[in-house]
Image (tube, rainbow, N blue to C red; front, side, top):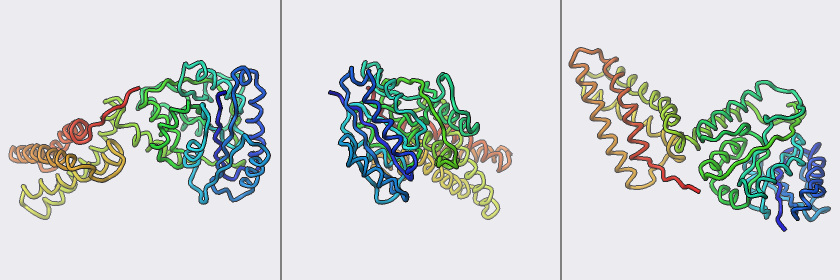
Length: 371
């Protein structure tokens, strides 16, 4: 018998938790579930709730052997609770269910079909595919979801309609391989997991699901702050393997900040010191430092630290190459009669293109894993 594990992250959901779990248990009565000899496992992960959620979860575990209860001793966030649940789950198929009763667990029958038929490794439940009826709520919340989905698609070359959906169902080997890589503790989990699925080249399906959103007065927790974090996560986790045009668009932002640092530093130094060689050199190294930190934090790596002796050597080589280009371009333009501002601006623009190519293919080359 194959098993379906449903992970339920919980944080202050005393009013809806019992109802949600009972709905999950009803899946066992579905004809498709019985025909495929499926078992059910529910993993409840309490993220240090301050209401009665923990007591309700423990009582549910005591009453039903299919229910497993886990808890965090401090609040970490939905992403952290899901990681805990993934590691503890035993199912052949592993899915996610919020405890707020916004989603209908019966829809998991739809998500299961392409996985059981081995047409997919992952199935997303989309709130934006055609439904008969839907509850109308927040316009800007929907706009944010669709914008983040669009941006994720641009960086992963996927064509999904609802990246932010709660309903994601995985084959066991997929989520067990991805889980050790996951870092996001809150709602940044959604773009993070989607990007790792895209990198793994797993087969993805979508199906329409029902959705009854709750208001903030009813306990909805996601905020604009989480939207900005999701935006950062798309860049942070997805940029290094995005199509080259998307990588370069993001690098224009990074390179632009570095170029501004270069220009401002040079203009300040020219007011203090008349030595052109020193001014160009110091301004370049300031911009190079800004560029390196931003590349590590956002574009090419995830931790701002030297990873190997080879990385140090290759980075120093790029500094020498781009520093030489920056110096001679600036020096030649000033000698030709061009003003200090425009000379440095032009040399900085040249540096944006050169730095991008050297960072991507020389300093931070990424070896891709293909399925």
